[in-house]
Amino acid sequence: MSSTILSLQSANIYQEKNPVLTNVSIDVNRGEFIYLIGKTGAGKSSFLKTLYADLPLTEGNGTIVDYDLRQLKEKDIPYLRRKLGVVFQDFKLLPDRNVKENLLFVLKATGWTAKEEMNVKIDEVLDKVGMINYQTKMPHQLSGGEQQRIAIARALLNDPELILADEPTGNLDPQTSVEVMEVLRKINANGKTIVMATHDYALLLKYPSKTLKFDEGKVFEVVQRTV
Image (tube, rainbow, N blue to C red; front, side, top):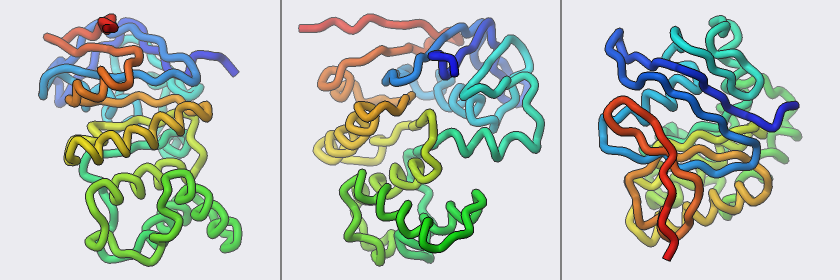
C-alpha cells in the first residue's frame, strides 16, 4: 500500500463542460490533515466531487485510495465510496428516522447483513464522536453540532481510508465548530487522513495544518504564518 492516498497530476476539473480548475497537481499522504480554502465558487466542492466520483475526471491523472479516477467505471463507484467517508455542511441525515436507524440505513446500503455486527459498529462510531447515548433521538431533537457529530460517525461506518469534509463547520457557531474540529482532529490523530474544505479561518489559526488555496482556477499550497 503506497503512502500516497490521493494524487492528482495535471488534472483539469470541469462542471458541465465549464473549466473550474486547471492543471491541478497535488499529493496527499496517509495520515495528513489538509485544509482547502478559497472563495465561494473557487472550486473546492467541484474538487471534492471529483474525488468521490460525482464529477468524472476527464483530463490529467488522478488516483485516490488505490482507484484510478480516469479508469473508473460506474460499477466501481460504490466500492470507491466505501473507502471514503464524506461529511457535508448540511448533515444530510434522514429526518424520518432516529440516529441509529440513520446509521443502519447506510450499513445496509453498503452490504452489511449481520445484525449484531451492525449494532457493534454503530456503538463504536457513536462512541468515537461522543454520541453513544443519542441512538433513539430524531435529527430534529439534536443541535447542529450534535447532527454534525452523527454525520461524522456515519462517515466512519465503513472504516474509510480517507475522510472528505465539505465545510463541516459551515452551519455551526464558533464554539460548536471548535467541538466538531476536536472530533475531527482526534480521528486524524488515530491515523485517518482528512481533507477538509473550510471558510473558517479561525480554525486554521487554532489548528494549523497543511493548506491548499483555490484561487482563479489554480490550486497551490500556502504556508501558514505561525505566531
